Image 1 (cartoon, rainbow, N blue to C red):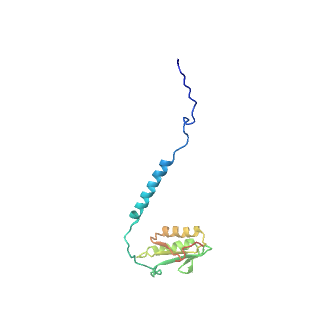
Image 2 (image 1 turned 135 degrees about the horizontal axis):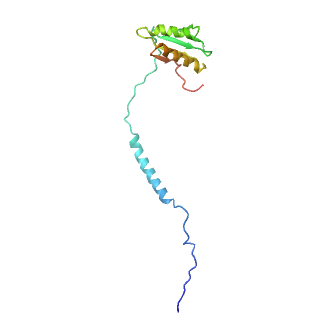
Image 3 (image 1 turned 45 degrees about the vertical axis):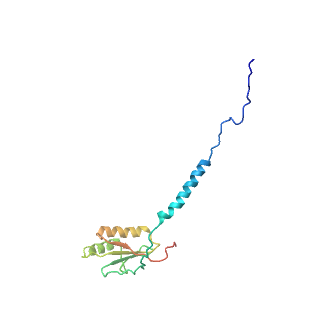
Length: 144
């Protein structure tokens, strides 16, 4: 006599479709502890008392050329208005051959068009001026 056993399908035999995140959490906690222990070692620096320095006022040499541009794009050569761009270029070419060559300090209004300042820098390059710098108002650091 043969006995036939029939088992009812269990719900436990169904494939598990959920991801077990417990090992992931364990690994992340271990990494967090390792990082918390090693960060103070990495950030450790030697305590030094650094010197303090204040910005000194600009001391211009007598041969320094100061070119100013107001918000309307009018150009001034050492506080004297320049008639037009070719006149400015002629003045720059005349001074570029001086020994030692003068520095050009450009003072531009904050509302001046970029084109006016770009034209000044291009004229300095065409004239062969080696040192061109921009003069800014110190302080603030915040926006307008």
